[in-house]
Amino acid sequence: MVLLHVKRGDESQFLLQAPGSTELEELTVQVARVYNARLKVQRVCSEMEELAEHGVFLPPNMQGLTDDQIEDLKLKDEWGEKCVPSGGSVFKKDDIGRRNGQAPNEKMKQVLKKTIEEAKAIISKKHVEANVCVTMEMVKDALDQLRGAVMIVYPMGLPPYDPIRMEFENKEDLSGSQAALSVITESEAQLWWAAKELRRTKKLSDYVGKNEKTKIIVKIQRRGQGAPAREPIISSEEQKQLMLFYHRRQEELKKLEENDDDSCLNSPWADNTALKRHFHGVKDIKWRPR
Image (tube, rainbow, N blue to C red; front, side, top):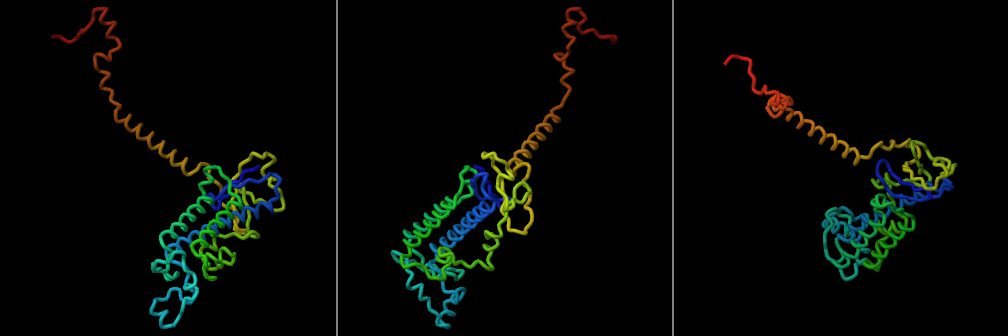
């Protein structure tokens, strides 16, 4: 199995295994699915952190309004009255004005936060350093855990306009958001390796050979963005170590220059002919008159 280290720009994303005989059309779609699914888990985790702190989403026509404005307009959060967390709620106002402030109690909050941490661990980029591959099944398992935690805390479900529910139902609308810039659709995804575009019409072995123990770094790009930047010859960590070594070396040479004192060579003990003159009896001979 060829080991693929998938990157987006210079940032590591995950490891993936694939046989060398895999069609690149299939492999590109697989990489794009895992990449986008990891982004979905990150978005859900981010929203669930807000859910644990400030309760469910407000209706779109009530978001950003003050209590007085809501009262003047006679708006009512009908779903907020239905979607009550298990064990009761604790009021914690959302300063941004996106959520209704009816947060779960401490016990239910911990259920959400613990599940969020577990889901983040499943899709963590640290798996690259640990040499652990991420599969679509692992990402789906993370989503299932998050969905289960929400059902425990909110047995009545979430409002249909809540981004968490929309993510679970694959109805999310990311248009105009920063998150939309990160998503790469399967049809637009393109893989690059060694400054070469991995064309979908070929097989992986056409580029990396038939050695199944090969490890390559592939970069996922949106079609039409051009070739990504080449990988640096040495990593940033290696560069730091190299600069540190040269700095220490320069300090050592500086100290040696400061200690380069030859006055000790005029001392009697440094005379390499003293023993010879001692045996010849010509010690302490002076040629000037006394």
